[in-house]
Amino acid sequence: MPKTIELAKYAGFCYGVKRAVETAKRLKAENPDTPVSVLGELIHNADVIRELESLGIKTLTSVPEKGEGICIVRTHGESPEVIEKIKQAGFTLVDLTCPDVKKVQERAIEFAKDGYFVVIVGKAEHPEVVAIRANASLWSDKVAVAATVEQLKAFEAEIKAHKKVGVVVQTTQRIATLNEIVSHLLSVAKEVHVANTICASTSKRQNEAREMALNSDLMVVVGSKNSANTTHLAEILNNITKTIHIENASELDMNDENVIKSASISVTAGASTPQNLIDEVVEKLENK
Image (cartoon, rainbow, N blue to C red; front, side, top):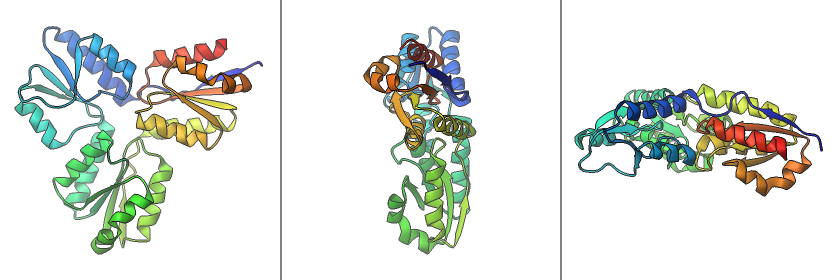
């Protein structure tokens, strides 16, 4: 069957991820004899992490008591406590928190300082959300995280008593999730102030992919299964047309039936997916 294959314009590295990866590589190139490490995965992509490790950039799972060389704070950010621990260990700290994530932290702190009950829309275990919560919690103990209305209901009595709520949202969340939670809050709180902190890159990527899905037999989403923005993208598109979420071109072989049946295929990718992986997927689709 003849196929048309279209690649999304907004696919692959966003500017925050691009900045982090390029800076990490440059730091190592400029300091070949200095240990360079990242606390946690710099971005959620195994191929990129392997490449960084091949250059001598190590991934730390925790802050050691005694550190040496440069320690990078990843794109998702960290709590003030962890940042202080990195400095106390003796590392030279380089903060590569995405500027958009920084804005969410700052907005959450503002709400906390101004006496609002802070609601963070996002997944509680996600490193970005953990850091946002930690920053807001320095100023108030009235901070809650919810990714669904059901999760929010656990804090309903407190919110009603507090009356005014300030809402921020994980940068890679779906706008539909934010809208559902805000709608519920409006029925619970007297005053609701919303800071829509979903980053522009996420919004553009999701909107473009939605439009493509309307005219596609198959959407192919490329990126890590651990990447929040990539999994959200796949969830959104799956409600519109047949969608497969793959980490690399080799996984296309497990989806041969879907590819063969589809005359129009569109490809998009998460913000932490490198261009070479996207190119490999497109090339393989063209040859199937």
